[in-house]
Length: 390
Ligand code: NDP
Ligand code: MG
Image (cartoon, rainbow, N blue to C red; front, side, top):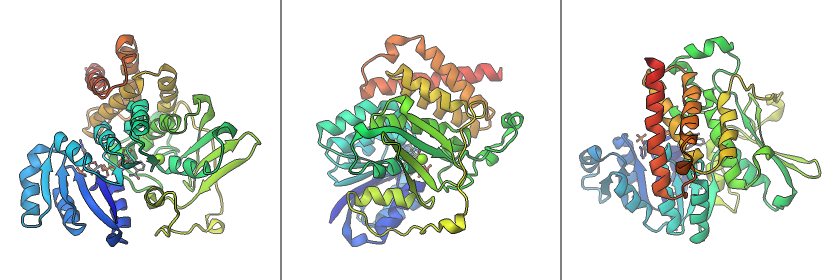
């Protein structure tokens, strides 16, 4: 039996992971499940999968979780320290599917105890890629990509020599507003930004797809995962979301990964790696799909992409600044306190302000320094947005 834990179990990726586990439940021994405010779902899944412990990230929900788990034998815990304790319990495979930089510390803990870390939480690579990779190396642990594009690239690289790789192309659907007139973007509503043309995902990543911040994070994620130079990473808008990524080799060959837009493919690949096992995903009928379209992303529509390359050029802790400013700007957009287009403008302004404090940006990449930078960038984002509003 494989011992596994799932962090962010109540979210979109977490539930897709549980769907796969449930189909072969006797093969898995579940150590920990974590969630946030969806206590009923966390408790139900923890009891069904007979987890040792269920953890909610929010301390004020501990009593609810205890009540929901009463008599089940599943331990209940809450708060960031409890998350770390759960992540330090031995496991063979850990799913990192918390949303946001809150996923970083539990991911590091899981690597420290040598687990294979299936990484959906791209934010942790963006904030602290070098720290994550170094922690994995030191503890002889594996990080397996779960983001669909990075899983696609990872699969395209099996048996290949990295020296032969010329470029990596990740595709983007273009999000909810890819065909909107530019002048309408400032007025885009939360409901409009929260509907994705092809993928069914959590609300935050769906809005990040509309703004292309998701692809911006993925450009940085590509650099960290595969160690290629920024000029080797390209983004291609592909409205059908059937080709997830392409790897270009020095002999001119382009290897594309094609499949139905269903996260259970990438999750299942990471779960079964290095084997391929049967997965419950639609088999693509390309004759029915008929057409695959591609176009270059428009820089004016998607300023977030340019910012990602600036982050890579600047290096240091700028990734943590970029991610935190984006998370905070997104909080404000969701709360109705800023316009859709204010998000990218805010992130750009926060990056400029933090860049002026180069001693901070160039500090060593430790968890403490990354957390401090995350905190500062959120404060700056609040200031910038307050000025815009006033
Ligand atoms: P969801 O919002 O659906 O789920 C997020 C999970 O994190 C939930 O379990 C939530 O708990 C929990 N959570 C929320 N806030 C905190 C916190 N502060 N501390 C700890 N846990 C918290 O997100 P997704 O599943 O869509 O995304 C998860 C990660 O995977 C993200 O990093 C995303 O970028 C990445 N990803 C997602 C894809 C997708 O298809 N959804 C595709 C590729 C990558 P609760 O809901 O109980 O409050
Ligand atoms: Mg993706």
